[in-house]
Length: 533
Image (cartoon, rainbow, N blue to C red):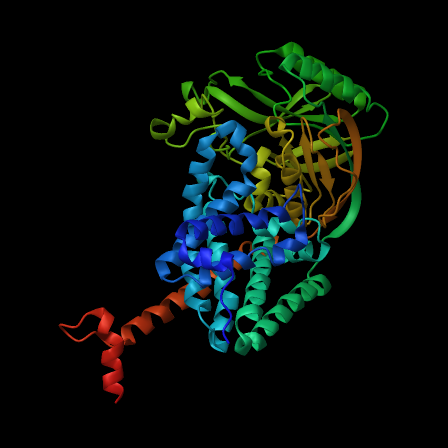
């Protein structure tokens, strides 16, 4: 006797509202794999409820809606710490970006509905991860918020997947995670497709094992001693500078190669405040090392740029014993709404409902590799500012330009008691593994961290409760990873997979018999049955 469905199953099936709630919650589930919960293992099954819901949709339109609502839930969960700053606008942004998953929901139903055949299962194992990767690629555009919350980044503390990142970047790790989720779904819904599902899971394990065994590893050739100065939550640029200066003086005699302050660590333009520049130069002489500060201030018009160069910049500035060395990097990729408002004429109202930028910051035009000197030693460093550490292409380019040490100066003080600080600190581990270069993540208020060239921690994190200067020793390395050599090849492979799938779908539609003239689409099945007789 057939058993009836349970009350929850009946409710989901009969009520589009309950189904919508289920889609939002299912989409939010993968956020638990990221810090602070950091349940990294959950990522390999966290997509399963969302995928099962979309594949069981009664129509392609409903599947697309499930994809959209799941995307809304995912974006809201991963960025929920923005709510105090942007209020209801956070939901608006999540809804807009969530729409990117609508085609993915349609694809799930197309390949996994009913009882998938072995061929459909094999196609799903490559097409579903490729579709997910296209969503990650599109939303990684800086104007749409950047690549925060890429699924592969949730594996930042898993050594085998970090090795995989050295082969194909965070993109390859995302492909692996979604492929495993797809294999689990196939094991659940299709007995006849279990052979390709198991084969797919074994292939994912084999790829990871092969990367671990044979992927080229940058060769360590020494070590670098970097001091991170984290003042903690201090109101006002003058008091903050005084605290940073006092903490830095504690480093005298510790033989550090470089001292790194966090984002917005200096609130005044140094050209307009020569006394501050002299204090920093004296500090550099006292500790015997260059100091990398970050100036967040209005810069007057320069002779080269004229009035067009005037405005507020966030700039990494290297200070030596004689003052600023001339090495400066102006932040290129600004945080939407936090540092500028896209299409301000249309979206400027966001300033009235939250803490959106009242004035757009100015952008830099190029990345910079700085020459740090310590005695007779020369160290080439590549700086980034804030969420630029989320962009794989930026650290890859710095590595190709010769950087031996990667740096990110950040400040997440606005989101001090949220998941944002540990999420941000974890990104540097993935960037280090991708490039085979040690990376420093220095913040004003925590979490600060340093990672070796394989992505492993080079020491304990400086938590958000700390106000301290800490010295980290990290190995340096030379040689290029496969990701540095070949770039985003998993993205190109995913595009090729989806192009082949689209061509096959178009061919299938062209071969479908046309509906006879005068008959509705609803009677086409009966017409085909009569023809078969």
